[in-house]
Image (cartoon, rainbow, N blue to C red):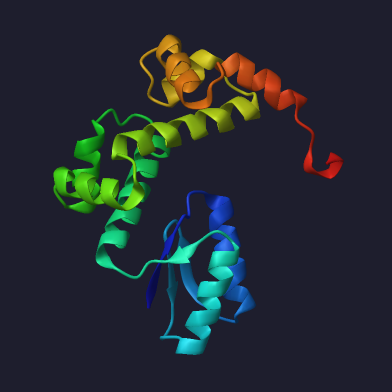
Length: 184
């Protein structure tokens, strides 16, 4: 049985969902972004417990076709941003090819369900990736701009500031000043 799961965006999410399934003694054949595959069909009580534990961890089970389409669009966007370094397709072509559904249809449903456009979600996810790369401190801003598909450092910086309110340099300075969780 395939269980679609909302809000899984990274490998940490996959690990958190795996812990949820393990805590319920639900053996999984596979857990990846947006889904878990299990053998058999759990009873209603187990599904209720699963829903509770997923909610406690910031996730939820997807139950209808439109919600599934939105989540698949999010996964396609994340794939487009993070996995296709050399992919310079425009976003609508990538979504068309990944989902096999007309972009206009996906866009309309996405906006209605999420309260923001696909393009705004795409930009927000790109900026989150830029933040991660900045935090690692291994790449220059020019290398980050190239890796994340920006045409220039100036374009990345403008978009970063419009989303976060900070330039990448200001963000790096503020992130160094943050305390670790153990110091809070």
